[in-house]
Image 1 (cartoon, rainbow, N blue to C red):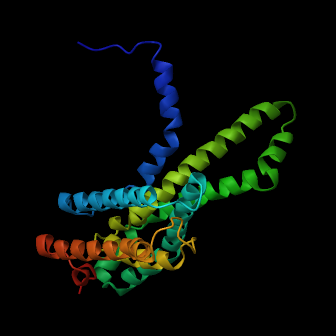
Image 2 (cartoon, one colour):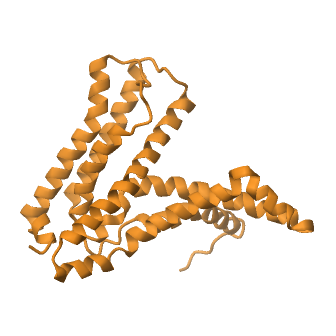
Image 3 (tube, helix red, strand yellow):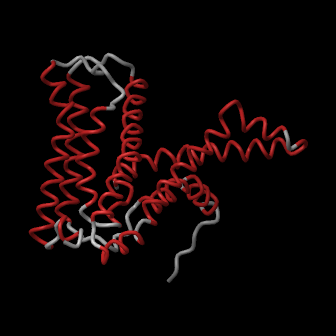
Length: 258
């Protein structure tokens, strides 16, 4: 027997789905297709475990030691670091991927070129959201655009506000997912995400926005938190590559067709 949706809930569900549209779209664009990857639940579990431990350790640090900044400043700083990571990935990622494809032998090189659609689509969509915000917010570009509509200014203002909200939510979600999924480079080959992750972690350490620790912790604790992330990511990436070799016979050399 089919259950009927209550009439008063239908508009609410449609409204929720509309608000979640930029997040849903970002997930669809940035999540790997999985067609060219091997499923290893142990690796996925360890990645989640590491993220959970990192989050718990950060909460413990903030709870145990005085915070030099306000909560808003601390969140803004973490967002800045995430954007810095995505920026490093945008610069270093294509260089590594192009080097990987160029180093591969012709039989597989063509296949890798064909698999660039997903990563390129992610980069283009991220730039599109940033460009939309820049055009609408810089020098009140959205306001000046609505003034050109004459009697339809109110409709144009609503459209501009909706576009800004959509681009902001989509862009923030896209930045987080692009870092998590390493811009879908797993669609090209499964050895690329772990290799890029370790490189990305150390490069991000060099361009972090904060020069001074946000928490007044001892120097030893700050060093542990500063270098713990890239070290743990490097160890995890090495273990992931070793597991690909041991369980699935996947190696960087074989990925290059050598």
